[in-house]
Amino acid sequence: ELKVEQNPLFLSMQEGKNYTIYCNYSTTSDRLYWYRQDPGKSLESLFVLLSNGAVKQEGRLMASLDTKARLSTLHITAAVHDLSATYFCACGGYSGAGSYQLTFGKGTKLSVIP
Amino acid sequence: DGGITQSPKYLFRKEGQNVTLSCEQNLNHDAMYWYRQDPGQGLRLIYYSQIVNDFQKGDIAEGYSVSREKKESFPLTVTSAQKNPTAFYLCASSPDRGYRNTEAFFGQGTRLTVV
Image (cartoon, rainbow over all chains, first blue to last red; front, side, top):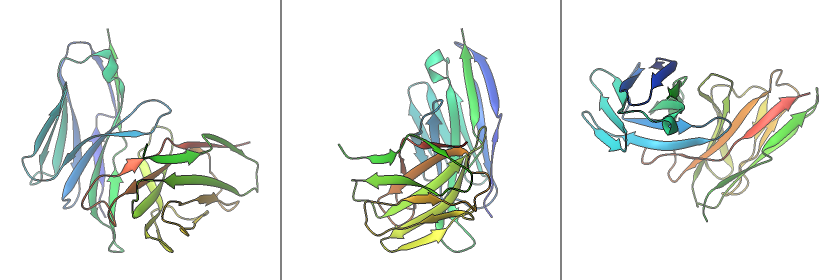
């Protein structure tokens, strides 16, 4: 069974600072997704990482994937208030029934304070 | 514009009542999914369908039912057997049968509350 763990679950950071969110997964996964969720809203896709060593950047966010360590990171550079949201990672993999599914972490609630 | 539409946005259910959440997509996607999100939690898969007239149980299917009579539509019924239905429900779709070749797109969600 594929399990996904994110840490930290809560993150309060000052504007202008850097920080990293970690996503560990338990078994082989061939792709890793990062989503953003604003309060009361749906999920917005940020990144899809497909291979070992993949790195993608969009604005102040950069995601990377290390399939050997079963680890993905979401790095925040010079945080601004607009980045306050909950960030989820999700791994693609096969379930016990043989179907391909996404398994989500519990999310990291990020608050950027002035 | 193409997208996934969930309705209603807010729904209130009385004890012992069945309610149906709507999910429609005009993206011509094959696969559709229903997730449940509880406060402070990630998403848990309820049911998914990779083709019309076929669907499979996810991790927490008990107390829920679905149908897939049309490619565009994947309604979710929360039955009276679901003892704790208060949650945020998200519908998603992807072009291929499963997420393997692409990402999923999510609807705006339905917030269900038991009164």
